[in-house]
Image 1 (cartoon, rainbow, N blue to C red):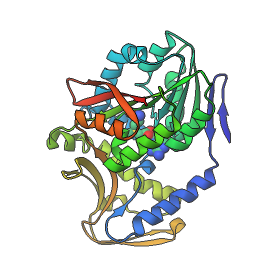
Image 2: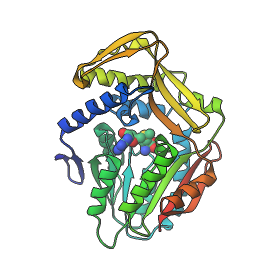
Image 3: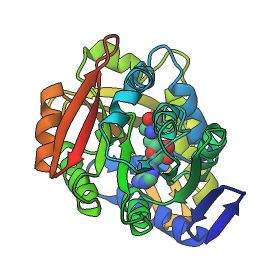
Length: 331
Ligand SMILES: C[S@@+](CC[C@H](N)C(=O)[O-])C[C@H]1O[C@@H](n2cnc3c(N)ncnc32)[C@H](O)[C@@H]1O
């Protein structure tokens, strides 16, 4: 379905009802399974969640986005020089696209190009189009899709002489556990052709205290971002979560080398979610696991790349906040 068209910007969108059905079904699966209750982190990003994430990315405790942007600002010309021309750009989970400007402007200095943000959040996609619409020589076509579905569509429309640069910034790869992350990169590789490239942002390991602050800030914005998932279930699935009876919690998982976000029940309680056909019992202290952010060593990115069919050709590391930008070339 074509949702919105302006002169040079387009968003391709799926029918809403199938999205609502899938949400109800994923909520039922995640909350009714025995043991740890869990919700997929992609549902954190509705309109409110996407706006809150933008605020998180500006918080003093969350140095990740600023490190990513410093690297892109400093090295975009070199990154682009390493790519075969002409190149079109696809971005997986673009968010507001603010950092992407550095790459697009560097490409625009040498050629006209197309930019294809792929996002499940419509409001993020609209933010991204507004943010980048002033760049000359770039046409923007947004896909309101899951990562791989969107990338398949982009690849199907590529011109035969064109290389593809895929951006996966902000260490969003860290939302997958390690085996799933490599499997995801391999799936991206299967959609690409040899000499296409993937610019991958990876947050590096750092002290636990610094990580816990980044995922549990003083102002409570990350807590609101996490709790909004329950508010979303209330809004869209007619549930009766009492938000005051759940608390945001950030935890280090040393074995997985990740930070986890949970929502912890403050007391014994019952919650009804009619549109998912669910009645849930929570014990005091029981949690819903809502997101993981895995952290990497700089060296392991080279191994992940080769296990997925890429070669990590270059890596740039920020000096203030351990974060690596990695240029992977499809072999
Ligand atoms: C952690 S944010 C990163 C945003 C941006 N790339 C950055 O670096 O600041 C992840 C983004 O991916 C989007 N997203 C999450 N899961 C997705 C999925 N399965 N398919 C497409 N987009 C997804 C979210 O809506 C969100 O905007």
